[in-house]
Image (cartoon, rainbow, N blue to C red; front, side, top):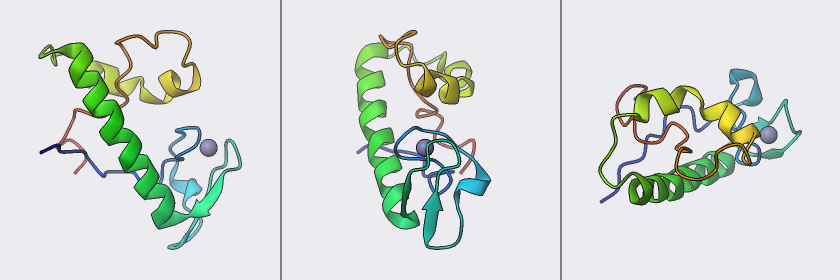
Length: 103
Ligand SMILES: [Zn+2]
């Protein structure tokens, strides 16, 4: 079906998308240093993965087979999440399609 990378999902904020090792306070606790979002770490990771799945499906529909840019887009992931109005059309594909790079 759909492959979504789980890499870093435990460090990424489900609310603002910020990704930082320090966000993961402990094995079970997630605290975003950027927006203050707190959650159970597993719960947060689940949300992140769900978002990635959704984004992936959306980006796939947008790209329609043109996936060459996925690596370049991936590097902008954090900034894109912070500025959703900048190019929220089809250029937003936060680190989704790179299925193996971080796995
Ligand atoms: Zn956050």
